[in-house]
Length: 223
Ligand SMILES: Cc1cc2nc3c(=O)[nH]c(=O)nc-3n(C[C@H](O)[C@H](O)[C@H](O)COP(=O)(O)O)c2cc1C
Image (cartoon, rainbow, N blue to C red; front, top):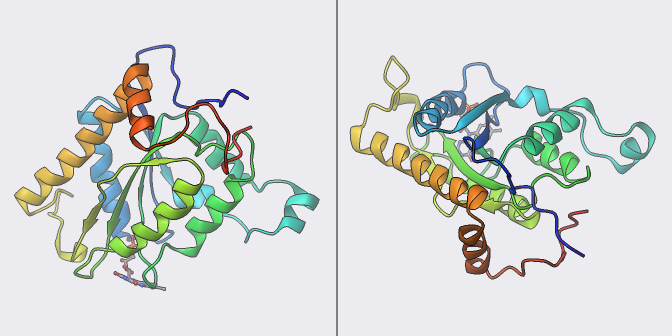
C-alpha cells in the first residue's frame, strides 16, 4: 500500500507552519517564546498559523466517549490545522519533568482521527521555564508520542532557561548570542521543511537518513 505523504505539495509557495504554546495560562512564558518564534519564522519566509492550546483542549481521552460522541471540537480543530500545514512548532511547558497532561491528551485524541495528521509532518520543539534546564526534559518526553506517530521531530530543540528573566520589554531575548542561536535553529528548521516539501530528492534523503522505509505502513497507521 502506498503511504500517503502529508508533506507533499504541488506548489512552491511559502511553507506553512502551525505554531502554538502548549500552555493554558494567560501570563505564559511559553506563549512569549512562541510569539518570538512566530516573528522569526515569518522573517525567514514561512507562513505562520498562530494557535492557542485552548483551541485544542478537551475532555480526557476515553474510548467510550469516542464511540458514543465522536471527536471533541478541540481535536477536530487540531486535526484541521495540522492537515493544513507543512510543519508545526510547539513551545511546551515542562510539568514534573514531562509534558503537560493536556498536551498529551490532545495528541492522543488527534492520533485517532484519520488521516493521522502527525505522520510525516516536520516538528520543532521549544520550551521555556524558570529553571536552569529550561524545561528540556519535557521536550524529550514530547518527542516520544510525536515520533511514534511518524512526525519528523527536528534533532535540535531550544529550551529557554530562567525564562522569567530572559525577555526584554519588547519580547526579544535579552542575551544576544542566545537570540542568534534561537533564530538560527528556526531558520535551519524552515530550510529543512522547504527542502522536504518542495524538493523530493531532499525529502528522500531525509527519510533514508532516518532509516525509515519509504512506502510501507508500519506501526503508524497512516490510512
Ligand atoms: C504542575 C507543575 C509542574 C511543574 N514542573 C516543572 C518541572 O518539572 N520543571 C520545570 O522546569 N518547571 C516546572 N514547573 C514550572 C513551570 O515551568 C512554570 O510554571 C512555567 O512558567 C510554565 O510555563 P508557562 O508559563 O508557559 O505556562 C511546573 C509547574 C507546574 C504547574
